[in-house]
Image 1 (cartoon, rainbow, N blue to C red):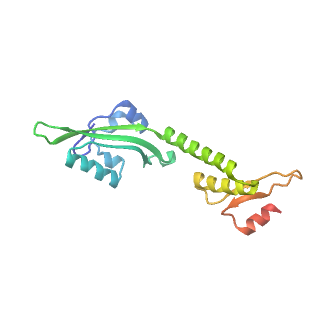
Image 2: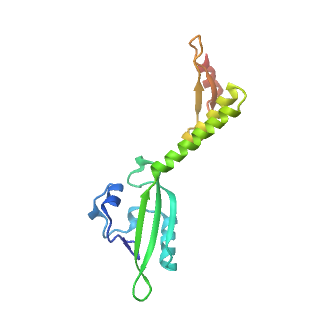
Image 3: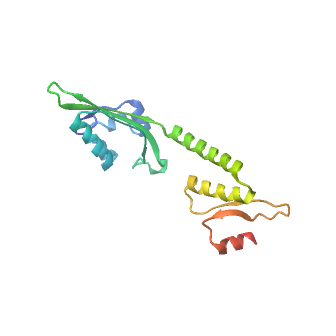
Length: 173
């Protein structure tokens, strides 16, 4: 629950727990003091100016005080409550953490893509080259490789992206 200037009036226990803070830490603080975001602040201001609610699904967010959590995803709703003269007095602010749902959907997308590639590629080399590309996009790693153990116990990279030729030559010897 926020005032028209985005200062916390009250939060529930679930919100405080999601932020790993105590309920009492919020009142008296501005939302954007704790969670800065010029783009989102502009959207909040638009709600106050237009008196129209705002909703977004799967909005990515990195907690500034917990960057180790990585990107989290939230369904966010902001609804104005008007006073007797028709002006915005308060804002009902609600969030739902949909991070696990977004991550599960991404894993499903990658799995489907890998299965599609498996059914389409003519050779193991073509398939592994394609898999490396999928893994690079999914993990956002610069260098990705797949080693395959041969019957002679050699484990060369059969597909890779990002590694230097000298690294691959050294590793595949």
